[in-house]
Length: 442
Image 1: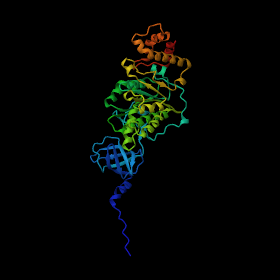
Image 2 (image 1 turned 90 degrees about the vertical axis):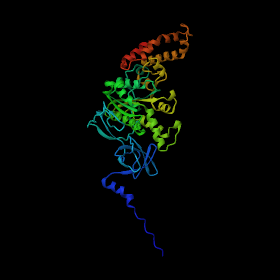
Image 3 (image 1 turned 45 degrees about the horizontal axis):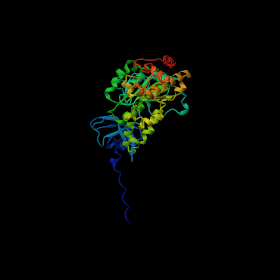
Image 4 (image 1 turned 60 degrees about the vertical axis):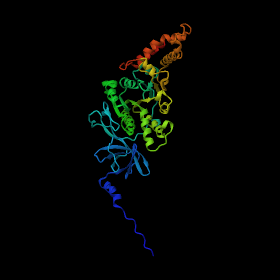
């Protein structure tokens, strides 16, 4: 009779870290591999979305987020800059989701994507720590949008009237004036609070935006969430969610909030970077499927509820003035309207450079009375008629008196331009805007 084989002996080293974790209550693994922008970890059992801390041998530590799995190994994306990351570095679970401190105490403050202050001051003790697992309001919990959102900008309030809780896109190429328009919305619109997400901006532009575009008036009621273009993709993505979470918390307190995000395109490109890192297949222009499933989740967080409202404006960078590129095209279908900014109008000194003929507010017809709607329609007709015949007029081929309607159109152009342009610090109350528009329309 053959002797039975001895059972395989347990190797103590395999369980050493597990025993240590059980003793001190921590969940710890270690870096196994670093491939491009992703970090593979062993010995850690955590769900997607968890926040971990990586401790390097040089004494650095930084946050990282679980973005997927490869076999049984979590894949992490680093959120803080770590210059000396190496295999074997310990990775410790911090929480199963991002925790933020939220409340009115964030108004007037500048924070990063994880809610950490960037303005050199500690956060107030009155803030409430909240785990961010965001679900959009249910469809039947959203009341109809029936109240005009007053921006103080004539071209918007008159010809592209928005509602309280509406979601709109500001589509612009480089140098189109989107930052100027967002500054006007932050300073001039009627709202209880403003939340601004600066996603992937150049570092020098942040302070410039705060001091010159916003100014003291705008900053006094605003919260800025900043993630510059040199930060990891996970931070750019998280900045958008953090800005939305801050706005949501204020809405739940009964406030009417303005959410300005510059830009949602950089959020999408950061999501593309993460999607490709975890092995998603590239589809249209290299964007993986997760981009097109994540965008509606972000946008649907905004809107009106029974408690308050978030009126959201998302800047959309138009690549090469192509309004049909995938992100622009997708967002036009998700949003309740869009403003197109024209480089040509900006070069002519027409600010804000909103091309009202290419722009649309889907709710305008439900928000303003019939006489104001008729006046807006008449102004649009004159603008469209002039654009159709502009080349003919400019070369002197049109003779006055040939077409009475075109004569009237030409006569109205200086007054229309005066109505549609205004300085960045000029505020036009809604009642005055509507009266001026009706006077112009005759």
